[in-house]
Length: 429
Image 1 (cartoon, rainbow, N blue to C red):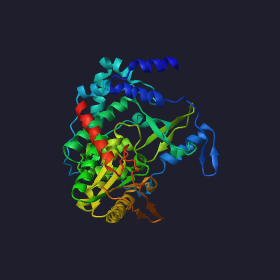
Image 2 (image 1 turned 180 degrees about the vertical axis):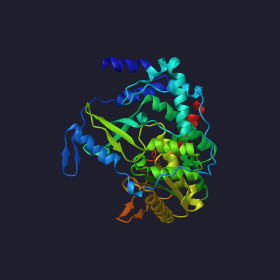
Image 3 (image 1 turned 60 degrees about the vertical axis):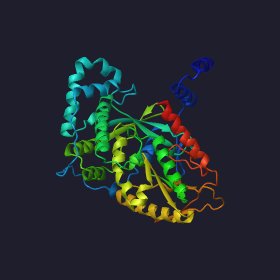
Image 4 (image 1 turned 45 degrees about the horizontal axis):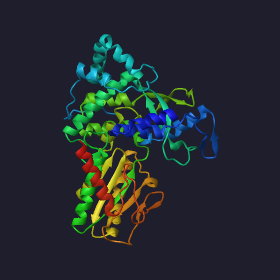
């Protein structure tokens, strides 16, 4: 440990990469068995029992009854999807980071070494998969590892873990190519809303913060008050339904080859969980997009694309997204009017989500008011659901609400800090 500490000191943090290395090293924890997991009053202690509970809780919670039949025909397709070249297949293999392989246990380094002999065959395979809309069965077999979510108070709850998929490095190359194609076409042809950030080039958390800062400052300049409500899509990737995903892609104008490939990618998937040095029996994954797969983020963003068009235009203008997190900003002459607007908007979003098999986790919903120069008044936002009434309370003045990794405060100091971060970031580039 002393040697490692001296090694870190020797870097002197001459650039940002050294800082991130130090943070990663400081957060590294030893490898310990997972604690017993609780399911109500039952306690699971064996690796098999814990794996079964994780599968039931995290992978089989999608409302599959809300799904619709898969239909891959699309005579009105308007979006292009160019085939790949051998050069792109080469880049997909050689630019991939060295990561833990999936169940086939073939590391990416082997594919790189064998490229002179295997390269033409790999390129031919990728081209065939894209032109025929086929995702090979071995690429749909994942090995899952359970990673604890940082900052959780109770690690006996299965919800305190995230299942990350380790997949075939050969299949990962194919997914990277398709994800790149989907992203390029979605941005060029404006399929995705310009205020949806994350998993897209040139759309970072800093860009999202800058957009929010601009809108809040603009409201202040007009003598108005701003309020922001954050929403979290429950289950996110795991809640995606296959038939509805295909329907969404059809409505967006993607060609049949893309629809067939996505259908093949999402169907008949299997997985096994690696937990405490034990590998569980293989099981079927009925729905959802696997976390850790290169193509999952862009497919999820395409899946929830309509959420940025729901409601009046003025409400959509104040709606932002970062991956599966939604942020709604409203402005008016009073904070009370803002909370009334937010109640109406959230109701519309929940109605859409119910129809699509998606729910919002109101336990994670947060409210923040931005009232420059005003003190004392801090109204709550009441949200009515079919089961309950939830009161979303804002933090006290000078408090903060976490949103996509940021913690914006009610007072202008945060805005100054954010602008400073943006300015420094621009100057450094």
